[in-house]
Length: 459
Ligand code: SAH
Ligand code: ZN
Ligand code: ZN
Ligand code: ZN
Ligand code: ZN
Image (cartoon, rainbow, N blue to C red):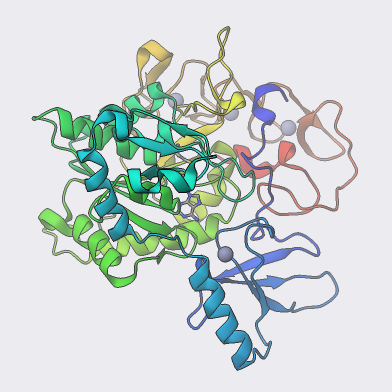
């Protein structure tokens, strides 16, 4: 199915999509044991024959056992010695410098003349002259300029571990679009959750342009960023379990940031790894929203903190399950270091990544010069190829191509699909009618694959 077939960024099936013999997420529970990534999440093994599966804890952040092999049955007795060993292990796995130490090091670093400013590529660390010797057989960059220090996402290599911490950086065009949109909507503070490039664009502008008033706080699990930002600009945070690694002080920094000026003019922007665990992300985002809600607001007490959640369109139904007030925008978010999701030289590779937001869709103006238009009936901007279907009374395309209405399915479907009387739904012409035992990537139900998931074209 062409450009849209690119499944997730990591091709990983989230455990909360329990198929037969799968694993389901139960969530963050009080008293959960911790791994180096904070409290572990509780899961349950589901099996076809047994009603109730066995519950276990596993690392919240790492999909790959190689990155964190934490595992514990819920009913397992853990001896005092093992607990002590685990605590010791967790401590040893923490970064060698604290955030505070990194801030001090940065202050020293910027005082150095250009010729003494080195960055170790192997250790991904700014070096002070006294440390050069220890890194003498490492590759390093010299003459680190102020401009480079303002763009750490260019200096650091993107973590490319497929399963755990795949970093996909916004293409400049998309990042600029997001920032312009944020400014045009009148926001003054941005809680950047897993969006280091947006954060650095904001911070960099703020330090260079006097009349630019937007500020950003970055929450990210990538501790390398603590070398470039103070405790008021960056919190080491795990968005799968809402864990602040630096404890109460960092949590308070975040709370203050959200609640400043009565919590007005603040927006949260997040671009999480696409590996799944939508439910865990939603639960953390609700906690961040609750932090914001605690402020005394005039008027509507049921207001929600404005959010841009950047995620692939095929997660639409999953996200709406947790955030019914959200809608999906047609804007295609592009990335620098993802071959599939960036503009090609000839013709564009269509990105499946979209913006989900609780801001009124008509307020989200998409660039006409990039082929978006306003649909007066839907009251939102849509892709130029997205035709308004009179039968569905909506612009139904999810992927930018024109979809076609199937009278039997009573909805619009992908242009490449045909109605199959066997399956009683639309599918690719060469699909196999037999049921598949593996659960669907999108909805988790058995009987069909992602490409024919009925929830994708839900209207
Ligand atoms: N497009 C964004 C980057 C998105 S990549 C930009 O250009 O700014 C996903 C980001 O989420 C990365 O920065 C990664 O470090 C971060 N991340 C991955 N797992 C995380 C976790 N468990 N908690 C918090 N941040 C995480
Ligand atoms: Zn872990
Ligand atoms: Zn329309
Ligand atoms: Zn239709
Ligand atoms: Zn059909």
